[in-house]
Image (cartoon, rainbow, N blue to C red):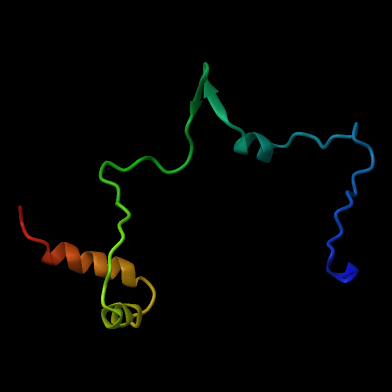
Length: 86
């Protein structure tokens, strides 16, 4: 059973010997303007996709999956193409 344990001991001997702050540290740090946190990452979309739960016949789903990677995107494009015009 001891062979399954991971070594969790720290190699850091002196807690007063903190690592230096690098440019990478500051690039990943949160950015504030006044008291407000500036959000990072991808900007919010005007028309984001919506997650849904949908029951499909297993053979239909199997045929879409058999088309390979990106089948969800192709299915969405097909639905968009066949959607009624409003």
